[in-house]
Figure 1 (cartoon, rainbow, N blue to C red):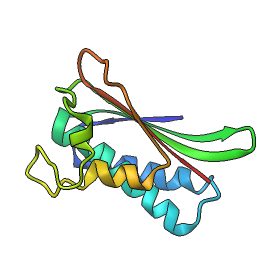
Figure 2 (cartoon, one colour; figure 1 turned 60 degrees about the vertical axis):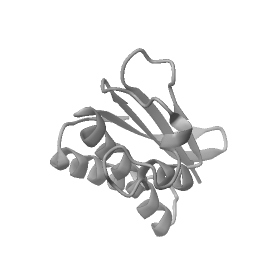
Figure 3 (cartoon, one colour; figure 1 turned 180 degrees about the horizontal axis):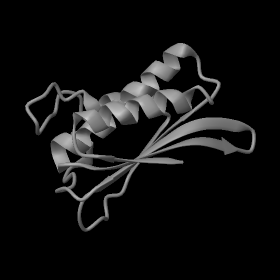
Figure 4 (tube, rainbow, N blue to C red; figure 1 turned 90 degrees about the horizontal axis):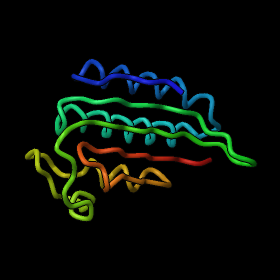
Amino acid sequence: MVEFVVTDGRDVKNVVEGAQAMLREVPFGRAERFLVATAVSELARNLVVHAGGGVVRLSVLEEQDRRGFEVVTEDEGPGIADWPLALTEGYSTANSLGLGLPGVQRIMDELDFDENRLVGTRIVARKWV
């Protein structure tokens, strides 16, 4: 597991570069590695835009007969009040295209979030080979 503190665009770049290096350890195809790195970028960028920063943890997963990749993001921002709406393509609270979280959901095999946090947001996304 590798952990990154994210506060600005340079940190997002470092997270993506770290993800790209770790993804070489998992037998994904080139296109899948690119897509997973894109999902990591979106999640890390959301920390900066919506929460003023946070933490990203990247892990290569090995469970029984399968391998994969996990990204966990945590922040102490305002949280996400309406998850179904946040996962709707075209919805944005940041005057953007609203493609980030819906795109992450499409790319990754699993997308979990903690709705019961008192403050902030925790997202766990996994992609399996």
